[in-house]
Structure formats: structure tokens, C-alpha cells
Amino acid sequence: MLLATSFSKTVAPGLRIGFSLPGRWMEAAADRQCRQSIHGAVPPEYLTAAFLRSGRLRGHLEMLKSVYQKRRELALGILRRGLPEGVRVDDPGGGYMLWVRGGKAGRIEEVRRKCLEKGVAVVGGGIFFTQTPKEACFRLNCARATVEDLARGMEIFCGVLGEGR
Image (tube, rainbow, N blue to C red; front, side):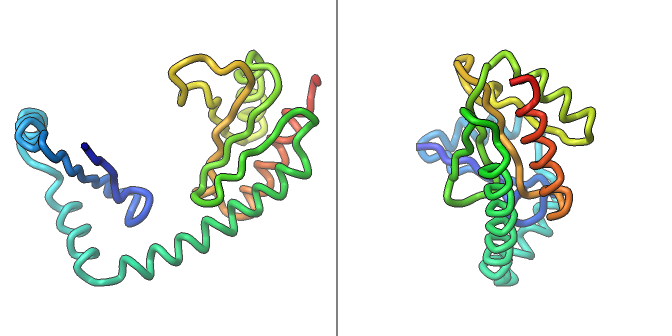
């Protein structure tokens, strides 16, 4: 089994630090890492290690969980009230990504473009699949925007989805 993850969403997005537990592939993974970059990003790795040693990770994660939960619940409420008939939002029960599904798959680019014109960036969910989805789908991030911008963005997204139906 190979595990790879990062601290980018939990400790500090700007540091872009990750790690892997390559198991039986340790030698091959170490060889590849050496061939790619000779060494890691020492200052960010030092800062991340210092933070982990400080004992503050658990409290930090609890704070993030609370913040993301409130934002996710806000977005879910707006989407449930505002999505047009035949379009649904999946409640992941955690995290900060929501999936909206339904409608014609051919509308993804149109919806993305119209939202962007109104100042809202959305990502068509098709890029996260190995095969083209049969219905429109979007992956929405609830983590980055302020609460006010998140609410505004979800309302605009619902409005754009409702246009031309």
C-alpha cells in the first residue's frame, strides 16, 4: 500500500508540504525523489516540523473542522433552497467540497462561463472523472471564500443553473 498526502489544507496552504508512506516501494520512491529535486524545500519542511512538534496540531484541526463545517452547512442550505428542479447537492457529511449534480452535461462550460462573468469561479466536475459524466456536475469549494462571498457565490451559482431551463 502507498499513502501520499499533504499538509497544504490542514497546516499551511502556502507551504505546499506533503509526505508519503511508500511501504515496499520505499527504495523506488527515494530514488525518484532524488532524481527529481535532490532535496526537499528545507525552510517549509523546517516550519512544518516545528509546528508538528509544538503540539498545536490537534487544536488547529478542531478549529478548521468547526470553520469548514459552518461554511459547508451554509452552502448546503443555500443550494438546497436555490437549486433548480432536477439538480441536487450531495452532502458529504464532512470536509469542504460539495458536489452538485443534475441537468445536461453539455451545460457545464456555459454555467462555468456565466458564473465567472458574475465573479464566481466554479469547476466542472468532469475533470475529476475517468469517463465523461452523463449529467452536469460541479465540485464546489467551501473553504477559501469569506462567509459573505461564499453565500453570494452559491446564490449566483443557483441562479445561473436556473437560467435557460
